[in-house]
Image (tube, rainbow, N blue to C red; front, side, top):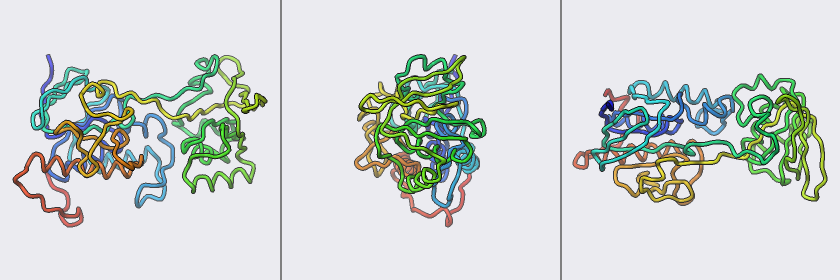
Length: 337
């Protein structure tokens, strides 16, 4: 028999944007239940890169991904959101004001509105097409850095050309004995400040750029790497001595059941109205990386703004005859639920 619960808003996704959405709802007197398929809050910040430094959170010159989640959890705690972790939303029925959200653990939550903050959806890493790759995974090939300390003194090959590859090359420089940064192009797609720091490390010899090359083969024994073979566009090969391979080629997104809800999609993203975070189904809102609109920036702080838009739109949806006089949090303080 299903367990039946009631709330104002169901938030799907317990990553940073989902947590902040619960806070914004709380500020408007709305109660929230948060559902996530992972067994802990934090989304990708916790599951993939808890020790990764984040530099573009306002008023925080640098904060680890795990540290950001910890602070968001403390921030929203005053509103006592109810967490349903380790379970997936398998069905949504009803309409605005009277939705029923069913989870894989036989819980039915009756809610007036839904906020989808599922990030990349059910995510997994893009794996490089290398023979016998699975033999090394979890021993010397990793798709996320959960503890920097295990890489101390190691020779590391980092593959990729985006922010993750550059950021981790910078973060591990000086801790590792050697870092090779492999990319198939000479140019990297990363923040200018990160590229400036990378230039400093390459000039000092802490990081060696291996471009334009791509991964070709792994060599090792019993799951432990000894070297990584790379090849350039003309077929010239080079062998890099390596203890660790960190391939950062992004995530493969899978919306799961969300794709079947009748929402308007654009390449695994949900189309929304930027000003309200509303979707094409009344009462369902999408925020953060899963939401798309013209000129959308995939930044955590953009997701925070999406969350605020969604909360205010929901308050207007639920109480259309009650005007909401906007006040800054410094003026009105924290409401009690």
